Image (tube, rainbow, N blue to C red):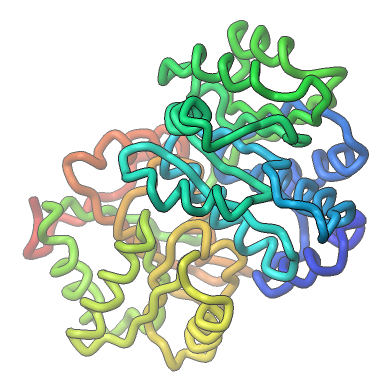
Length: 377
């Protein structure tokens, strides 16, 4: 099964090819055909299973193929996410998938000034990715109307409930047109989740995928405990080992990736950052340099790293421990491929210990601790 078999339009296939994607994940293979047919979806899937593409690609295709270029842009698709971080990740995905399309999207969330977000909304957008609180604020101020929404995605619904957003969700849902296509995703299925799903879905197709839980047997894993302020020094120290010829370094944020790459270059270690704010050409240049080994270190966020497949990559370094344990499995799976051995190193601060605990639980073993380094916390 390839993405071409899923009857996606050529601009989307071209974008996926550039990102190195050819084979859909199980959640994508199960969801995309039904969504292209206009069906509602109830999806049980965790982060790291490829669910964003499962809903983003059909939405982009359906909007693009029936778009009226003479009509004023209004919000046709709404994606509701529980946190700023997830909203930004989803936005990065839409940006990369829609590279060859004439659709626009923007992201709104709280904790920052609303001015730039309002400016983007006034220009007109086709797709809005939002957290509940800021969305309701801007609706109440008259900056957002949801009358024309045709596609509604509720992502990580269980986290929404855990964070106390149930009333905000209900207020948003009440403002949506009754006639719409709804996509509901949750990592868990509880009575409360089912009750909510049953109120907003119409004759849905149910899809479910098992989360990734095993790491490659040929990948050697170890963790370094370190104070936050010493992470950059530890990375430089580790990379001064000449045996690490080629490494993919993961950060949580785009800004963090830039800072790490800049610091490495200042110490004479050739590095490039790759993330969603980089242009397509810049990402391609960095990836090409990493693959042909003119760039020793590639610093990437999780979203930008998807599709990076490098032959005989020896090391993956988790500069920051991912919040989702499944993401760790995907990260270290970049090494130890096709029968080759690989090494995965992780830097863990005190506040990241809960994430490490979740990882150990998921992979059913405790990662070996490296105690002999100068920055041991």
